[in-house]
Amino acid sequence: MKKNFTLIEILVVATVIALLSSIITFSYSQLTKESRNNRRKTDLEQLRAALEMYRSNNDVYPNNLSNLTSPTIYIQSIPTDPRSPTYNYNYTRISNTDYVLGAYLEGVVSSCNTTISCGKVNCNYCLGPYGRK
Image (cartoon, rainbow, N blue to C red; front, side):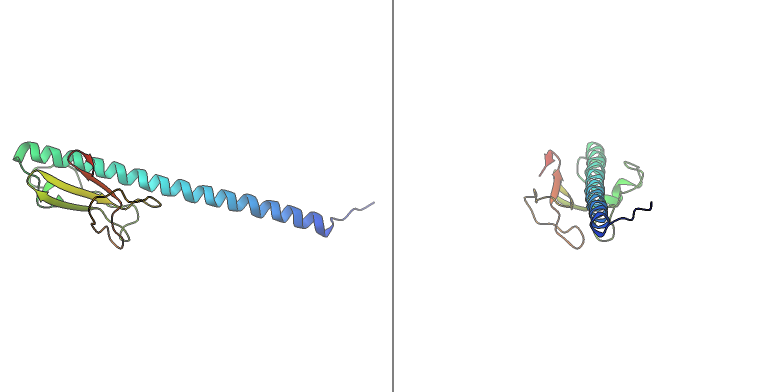
């Protein structure tokens, strides 16, 4: 005896499959955002370390980040944002003893005390010589 699937059984299975795929897609999207944000934080910490080495040797912070790669190498290369050119990192030297490094973290409320551009949006994560700014 041959038994066929009813329309209700097919709809239930299709609904369950659609629900599971949407959950998986959302989770993957969140994980990739978190991964990019963690990379941005790591990149800024590397830049901050290079800036501190530069200041240790020269008693001032550089005018721009390209000074970190030549003539003395403080960092191999200047990192770029994972979603470049949409977003980028920003470095602003405020004085000989102060600066702001900025990045745009996806899905995060701004913690910056100043407004600086990170490409098409304002930076919402800022670091200075003494940590978050």
